Length: 492
Image (cartoon, rainbow, N blue to C red; front, side):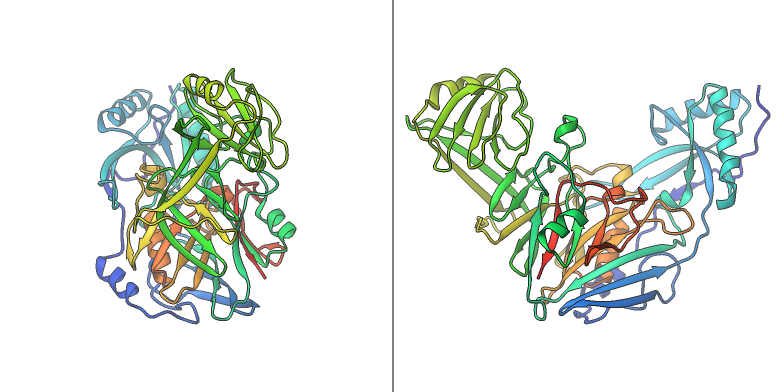
């Protein structure tokens, strides 16, 4: 039996700290600025921020913002059902097992804050010990002792919890004022939909002044297709990935940007009058689905025993074939599985025409979004600010959980001010003692502090990257820039 270890972490009820409503209201009514604020930083202890400004080009400025100091250390969290938190009964059971093995552990309650579409919740952790930043190896020794006792555990940095912290924070803020900027905004999927590519590579090929990573991409599909965006993607007016209904999106057109929730509708109408819904665009089809592949897909269609109709740019059926084949340049492939393969065989005969109709709707006003060659849309992963007030829509955006709402991670955010200025932000994280990242609640606070009237969270974690004039100006948590599904480009 291992020696009895003293738990240096008190058994307390821990509450996530959120800025008061009055702070939001004050920020929301603050006029648009030509500079960033230097006081009133919404996170950590009060005090002035350290700020450095660099003019990039006419209308574009890059700011480095630093605030806070390290005070958090390490603890050891016991795992329950593979997670470091769970129900009270699960936590008590794990704690009892550890105590019987000779370890003094504490059960801690914490509250995940509620957001606009998901109520607050209570969960429990089981923890042991408290060590400084320089004592991580001591915590790792305890994890090994627990493992020897057949108890799963991990070292946890307390600054990642999303609870009260002193930081520090290391941010890059890029502001684009359309009144002085003469260029345009675009989305890019890189060389293809299926493949991932770094934002700096996409920026270099397009000749972009600056870029940030875009939305989330599908890491749960075939390994050769993991560049596929999760949610909507429109590039130069072409819908390359369908929307997930109700999720937030960043709409770009020339030098304007706005944020809203969207849905997309794609239909196929056959020459014999039959009409049906196309379920997806440029992704693996589920059972009994119809998926449209464009020549931007960059891979063969899946050989899944379905049926395919190869269409030219006018919708004429060039070939009817079994599933699994190349997508020639200038063609599209309508791919059916299960009962929808029967639809393809029955209503997409060679030389017939299929009319493919695509529509994207703004759910805030119910109006269609014209898909012109100047239009790009990037899907986000949690709306943060709406009309100058915090509005985190985690459930609609598929992020309603402790890890995404409460825990701190590197973040990439986009916001728009009342005057139409675009604000792009990366908050570095996962670097104990250097920078702690931000929770979703904190991300909303930061965007309000920066003057955003509308704001959205993009992909984060190791994907967070900001590129300015060919150089990555933040510090990606992987240590190197990660290949991602899409990017937002600022072109001259």
